[in-house]
Image (cartoon, rainbow over all chains, first blue to last red; front, side):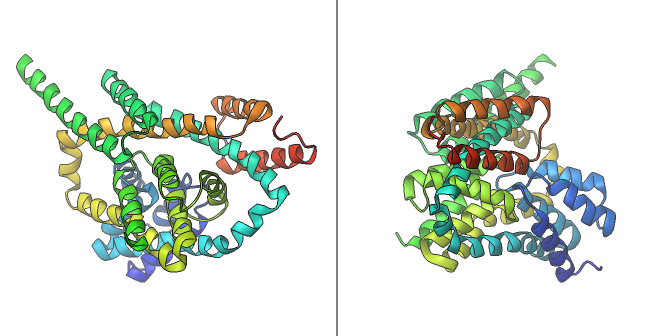
Length: 185
Length: 179
């Protein structure tokens, strides 16, 4: 298929439909569609986009769609990719939302959700473990982690404030570190 | 403030400030549940499970859902677009200056601090959930077992959901929930 807006939309729509389980499977799915089948980008490029996406704010799947779409057809491509990726999610929830509140009232469904709630907490801790192994690598990152955790648990400041604070500390620390290196040389 | 403007601001700020991917949007989604009551914390936990069997990332799913519970389809549309908009703007811009972005020391310094901060926010959510969920003894045992097995071999999230759904169904049948 050619790299038209519609072509990009259709490809990402397909990926969006298959994107079950909350975004974990996006890399293998995109590899299959964009690298193996369409040969629009190389596997290396895709991996780089994916890694970069996790360093940018927002939803990883959306960021990856923007980067890949931009590469294929500029801003138009990015827009088409996002629309394709999001539409299946949007439609599925719209369809479910109207019946959801009634279904959840049923006693046996509540039992199911009691169990599922445990799985959610377990998955959150697994995600924390994975983020920790990538993010907390030295004394500086430990300090940022502990500071942010205390502020977040206190519930007194907004999360946006914590993130902005971390951003500023990161930049200052980098500048100080660079100066120290220059001083040694 | 107008409900549509509120939806826009809240979900736009999630798109702008959530770092670390995957569950990084969760702390913000829980904060919204406490502050605005568009959905409850319990509903959010249910949504996480539902999100695993419906297409799309959790952040998008919850945005659509929150929009729908407040003001129907128009609300869904606004919330969903708002959470995506920062990504579209920032990521498109980063793509244009890709090589400079990767080589820039200041950017790298910022990312190095943002990742542990994102991890800390999610940790705070995990810790809070331990206290507010009515796990009791059996639930705690199940939770510890699940986390323990993940050190050996990590399964697809769907596997955990299915197993826990069956356990919940079985324990409920014998009136063991709350033990």
